[in-house]
Amino acid sequence: MFKTQITPTYWLIAHRGASAFAPENTLPSMRLAKQMGAQWVEFDVVLSKDGELFIFHDEKLDRTSNGKGLIAKASAAELKQLDAGRWYATEYQHTPIPTLSIMLAYLAEIKMGMNLEIKPADDRIELLVDGIFSAIEKHWSNELPIPLISSFSIEALRYARVRNPSARLGLLLHEWRDDWQKLADELNCYSVHLNKQIVTKERVNAIHNTDRKVLCYTVNDIVQAKHLFEIGMDGIFSDYPNLLEKWHGI
Ligand code: G3P
Ligand code: MG
Image (cartoon, rainbow, N blue to C red):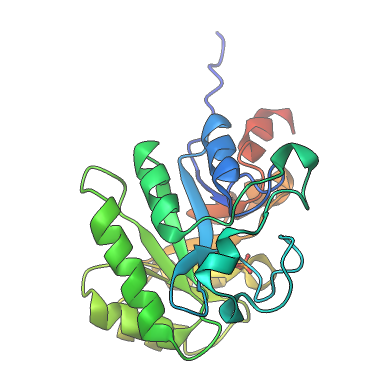
């Protein structure tokens, strides 16, 4: 008798792409995620001063580009001149901050599942959400995995639901809140995405009892990932697209 070792097929979403190995939220980071076997990526969507949509995490440009100050105060033309790869490593020099449009065209080409996180920096929520849906309508087809759209901003999710009654929405929770179900019901959320620090088995069960998926961010430790899947987690966000390759080694 011998046992076949089956690699688990748990849902791993490459957080900002393969961000442990390449500059986060860039095309090279998505390309590497694909090469490392990821089937899904997560990235953050923000607005420039003049209303163009870009992929970027922080409110300020300083950490992950050679720009300075608030991204929401920079024009699209200024942002397109910036380098979002050099801070990470010289081999990534001249990597641009991607526009949403370029990102979606690329992910559609490589057939990658995507979680778009809406990150409003100011009150231009409708402009941001409208831009996201317009880009999806333009670049995404029905043969590709249905996009998952998430946010910490209830206002953004509320408008997303108005804008698209059937979109898959994910409620992001950094802190636990007892009114999560009321919110998830109101927004007709497909999933709830929990900070790993607030996960308990009871909470995972409670969310499952409302027929929703539960996801957890950001999990970079295989022992923790195993534990989360054991208590019923449906998926994890990880900076390491290859995290689950170590599954049989522990
Ligand atoms: O969407 C999961 C995770 O990306 C949320 O936190 O700050 O990494 O965007 P953050
Ligand atoms: Mg994010």
